[in-house]
Image (cartoon, one colour):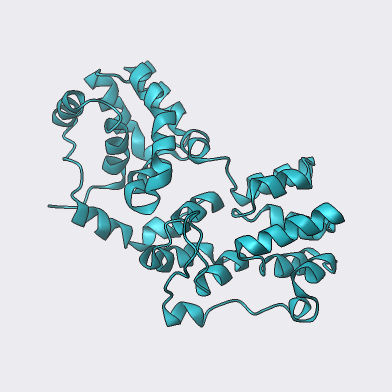
Length: 279
């Protein structure tokens, strides 16, 4: 059985939000193959193109939350600019809420841990953050905040005396920054802009409805049962009402959606509404 194309995967994700009868009729009408079997899905997960496109920082975090060594090795290449996440992965720091034991790490990844900043060696976590006088120094100090204990220490330190701006900026764009600490930093427009630029999301519903192009988002979500199963339902719940309202059981609307999928540059809701309107 061949692996489904990106567009077929994307349409399949939306078809999965309907009933089995509708999905079967649409597949027959449009010529879409059946959903991928587990083996084909795992082969797709290994392909470099899945990781070469831009993934929002929060999506990378949802993958890391699985604390799966295989997934960590795959997503490693997508977190190349985030020294904090790379350091945490290289040291086996768990991201899942219920895990406390270290995650097994391949030696090849351990050897690629970013260099430890000199200011951290001299001053420790809080001291390095307080000494940050540039964005570079702020990013370096923030990259040493790894565990839940580290984040509590930073939260307490900022509560006692606010950290300098560069340190706050570097911490707030970390996707694993606790929401309570991010709120403690305040809602300055510059912070909001930096958070948006970094790809830090409120949750999967935002990724599903506000990011594009649609085919890329849906392709990633179609792999969600392997990449971030605990987060997938929220994305599906956000899209399900749109699918029912604008596509429903109308085969022609699904046919239009299939034709538009690969070249449409807007978001998933824009694509679904457009296909329904054209049909």
